[in-house]
Image (cartoon, rainbow, N blue to C red):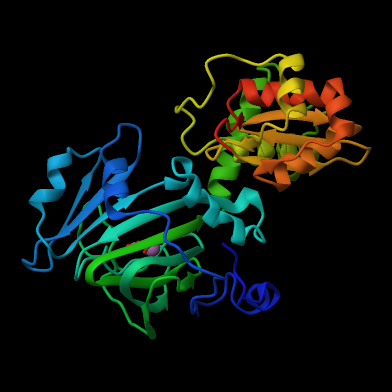
Length: 385
Ligand code: SIN
Ligand code: CO
């Protein structure tokens, strides 16, 4: 499915990270990839992150439960005012993963996952704001979306332990989204979606953006591992000072230098960031095939035209280096690529379906790289294609 009625350049110039936009069914032909029962099934599975939000109707009461749920849970809920939300459905359903493709004008490293929600009449998760950009695609049925004020950490919240619901919601715009419509909401903008009618399903193509605190915190954690205890402040040629209580400008300069020497290493930061950011959303889920693959077998499969794909849970990006090389990052692993492996890195980062040409097929280093990616469960052969 393609977005045929959507101007990417205008969107990036006037809306992305700035203001909400309703995009009325822009698809060439829209087909919702999931049925409500498929979503309920996923929410019963161990290892899949899911939530159930129910409105009790008493004093604006909201209740949050975490999955996995027993199958019987959904039949106890009644016909109104509940929402089931399942995270990273793209990891499990290729047709849902395909919904990311039209949004690839945003780089891979900013993409988080596709969350899918199913809501019954009057159901929603309440007025809130998110830290991230999101495209809310209405899959099935209808949902009334309101957007409101720009929020931040100081915005007042309702006194609820688990749900971060806004105490005040000033709606500035309102739309009824129908099957195929897309609402873009930038970070921090208050929004509230309420299902209209029996079955309302929404696909949230969600993005991520690192906070300064996670960059500093996690990078510093990584640096700590390589820092030695005897790498220490020194003050040879110490000068006398008037007041022993003063920490001199000179001392501060030297101390600060110790910090920025490490933190200012751009190349080291790039390597660290590539690995950190390409770590899978759920690193504990094992996507490896039972058997690793050897280069000869791999070459044979590829020569036979067996389709090779990126695993939907995997994260791929690369960083160009100054010399003729690129660093490829896949699922938290770094691969230093030169010569034909540069082309390979560009191919695997640019396309879900990996097309290997004659030149790469002949290259042992390209085959070895693919074999490593296969061995860590980052690419797989689709035997059924
Ligand atoms: C929903 O799908 O109900 C919630 C999505 C969101 O508000 O981010
Ligand atoms: Co939201």
